[in-house]
Length: 241
Image (cartoon, rainbow, N blue to C red; front, side, top):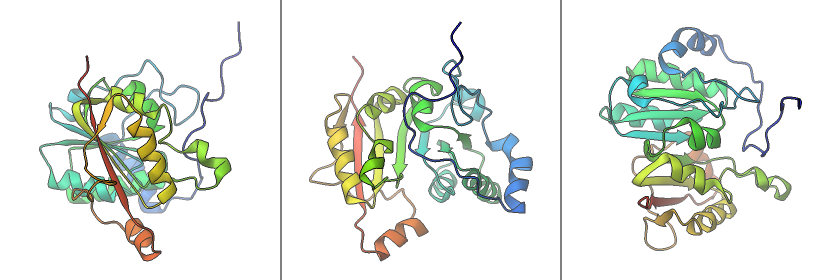
């Protein structure tokens, strides 16, 4: 029998860091994870998703409602704000950094948010297998790591092949929203998604208007302060045959 795999076939768009969490963040995992954090069966790595695992949104949220998925939710500022303002929608935050997940849970609990769940996992695996096909009304990817050094660009999340995973997870007519403050990455995003046969542009001109549902975060302000232009893109999932 062959030895079991201990590594992924593809590079991931992140590097795990072992930053220390504060006492409040540690307490968030102990007290709030049962409410917010999904318990996901793993495959070959701690942030992997077993290919046979499936999420049941109706069971997790206790209702049937539009599902918005944010990839790389960071400290959760955007998704907690959106979940607070849109109680009739359900939200799923996908993040690999525990400190960010803890902060998101703390802020969600403070705001009384109950329509939000979190998952600690590699995003492409969530999109390509864990979510039911067509489950997401929208997928948000705001300021993902640009991996600006040339030797690292293979780690970028939005690269050829990503469209297949995103298209599987998004409902017909659903939206893929992106934003970045790194020009080279914005150009790559647009090139990759323009070439995807399952998506079409949902904007006119070179770039989309700023998504008014994206709260202004300290990260975005920092990019603007450094003179970097924020570029938005939005693509619509074409109807399935």
